Image (cartoon, rainbow over all chains, first blue to last red):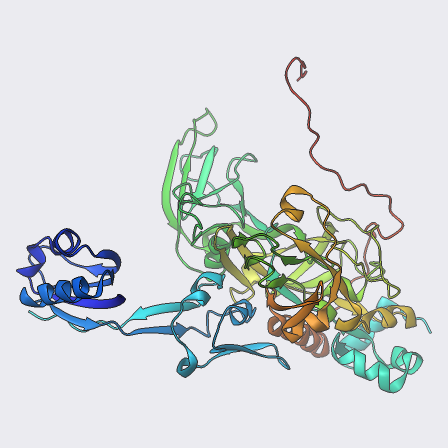
Length: 141
Length: 405
């Protein structure tokens, strides 16, 4: 199975080679999407974990056993209308028509409710008006 | 019926000029007829806003103390060409910082380049200026490392060697892998069709034989006022044209100039094309004086009557392989789907139609207010009767050839 999670570390936990242990002991493929970890400070890690279901669950249990708080990742796509130049390139890549063109005005609009956070629009926008935000809580001590 | 530039300008000064956009003129002429409309309408305004890589700005920094003859100069880490006088440079829109990873990890992001520098300059932002020199008796300084804004510059003027392309390819990908091009992302197996023109609003689509647009034509450029200075590079007017005179392939281009200090970052926007590079979106609007019925006729061109060639960017474009995929029109391109080889393909625009419309509207308002008068070109640019050969780089071996210099 494969899923994205957010791990919140305390200052003490950030000293441990957690990623190494996840790879070595649980045979997980790990893709670090975002990280803010500093020695002697609390931090967080956004990772995509991939592996066999039982190994995946054992790996997550291992993290929890260390006191790491593990939560599912919630991502949000944000369309910054003030940066957008209304070219409309994104709309042709959007599979759910969350980004859509009004064919009368040729103007682009974004409906967050339809967005499935596939990320295709991030690459094709030449002004980088579309950004992906990870919802990260205040790290816990 | 024949009007002169001076007669139209006199009406502009009196606030009586009848100005309509290249979209509005279509219905007006359909309703009133060509003859009546030509008498009533004085100016038709056009607009386009899209990526135009062949753009850049000349800058004079003023001198450091002691003086410097810049050998190399960087703005926010992006090199500007300094092989001209001591503190003159040209920052090109497609230039990248030397530290950019480019396509080493494919596809590269190209987050910042010359186009972004120009946008930041126009926005009045602080710019990191670095320069090095070898030092001379007249220019002893060897290094500049400082922060400037556009207000610290003596001159900063946009000078774009090729803008406002008259028509362009519709790009598809016949290959089996995703392509990252200047026409954006092209999905494999003709997964999308990318196009880049304002169609019926585009300046040169409305004056297909350049009968009013020439050297010295005053234009909307980057939110300010600019001028046409020459034909653009790769200007190729002698291509097949439709009955309406509009080229069926990319054809005419314009070189334009204007003072960057009166422009606006809303109309000069740095762009990053994944896997391709950095560039800039430029806003251009050109007024067309309705001197007679023929000129008016050209401005009534509609999206459905403008065709562009479908070109494969897997092999066709990069390797010059002739693959006939037919033509499509801009009405269908703007509808979101076109039919190519009997297949429905989703279309991907690169040029912003809403902003093109806004430019035509803005220019119309400037002329109506009397703040923008028309200029009569001092010389024309080569048109359809020209005999311009579209050249390529010759493939010759420099071995054994003595090049005298």
